Length: 211
Image (cartoon, rainbow, N blue to C red; front, side, top):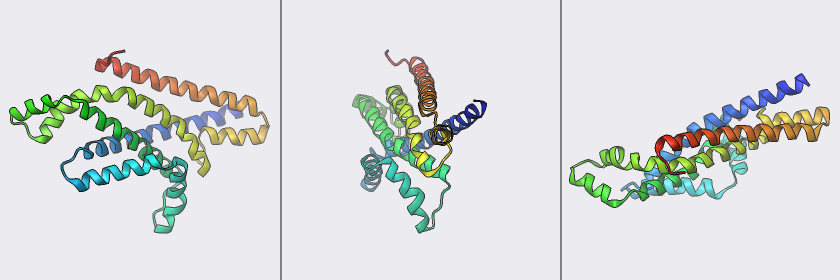
């Protein structure tokens, strides 16, 4: 029993590491693509739109296989963990970019007009006027995306990353205790998702987001 607990704990640790690293990639990608969707330059808007549509319109599992198994033919090799972080982060970032774009567009146009009247530059308007009002609106959907990202980490078990689902599959094959092992895994995913949800609710309260 102790060996089982150690293996699941090891898998959970790697699942948490995957979630945290991919979330960092997703935040950067979401902000960059979300802001680029509103850029004045058409090529920039087009590149951001292409990224969002490709990652939203194709299977995350196929993206993972493509990065891990196909990119090496082009001379780009990532280990399994890095491939998982890149795909999960970019996939979540594509959805997050639409959250960013929607929140920015929801800021009343009068706010931008007032900033222009104060002779603020485009960057100053974005940093001092638009983003401070848009960020609270991004928090609730970002929490949902973070939980979805946690659940999607199970996909990287397909390329043999020793995360929670992969550990459960190995233990099931070794012990044949399928029901017990996957019941424990369900509880662990639920506990991790609950912690993420509570963390984001705390952020919402601090940002003054209505309940």
